Amino acid sequence: MQKAIKRTAATAALMGVVFFATPASAAGTPDTGIYGGDWLVRLRAISIMPDARSSDTLNVLGTNVNNAIVPELDFTYMATNNIGVELILGTSRNQVTSNIGALGGVGVLPPTLLLQYHFNNAGKVRPYVGAGINYTLFYNNGLHAGGQSVGIENHSWGPALQFGIDFQVTKKMFVNVDVKKIWMHTDATLGGTPLGTLHIDPIIVGLGVGMKF
Image (cartoon, one colour):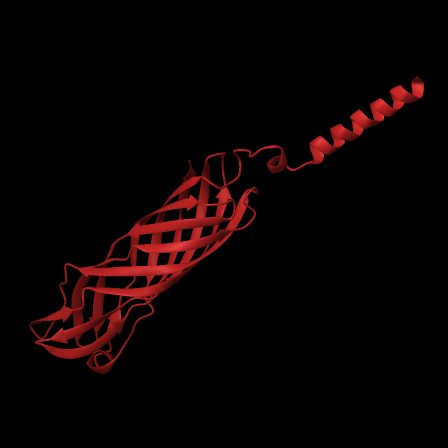
């Protein structure tokens, strides 16, 4: 009888050790991590740093694009514990310069769709990487040279790459650091004469906060 009691006690103790040693995700999904079905919403301040280059006459003019700091909003849906789909929304007004002076500004609206892989989804520090496609709409064109308006192609498609880290602050809130590389370009004309292609191709560095829903 005593042996049976000892075996029962030992079994119970072992089960207790196993229970407390088992990761929380195995016993049930806790609300402290990021898991499939969660929505993540981030608001960032971003610095847009163009890596500009141009061809033909635009290259001769030394055309360049200035940096800009603007807000950015993104929405991520976690399809699984590790796979997310992110839509990034933001707009900026970029000034274009040259060796003959300022050429004016143009509005840039570059919605970007990214497929992400999130690491350490149950931890407090969660890196992720992403790759996807960018569509850029150029609008409110105010470019001019020599008193004439510079016409530009109003849209472009290009790839996008991303790396970021979420730092958990509370169960629902986190701080985010994010870096993206986006390829975008536009063709320019002056009085119907082609001037060449301007590649903007910015690196975008962002810092912000996010919420899990």
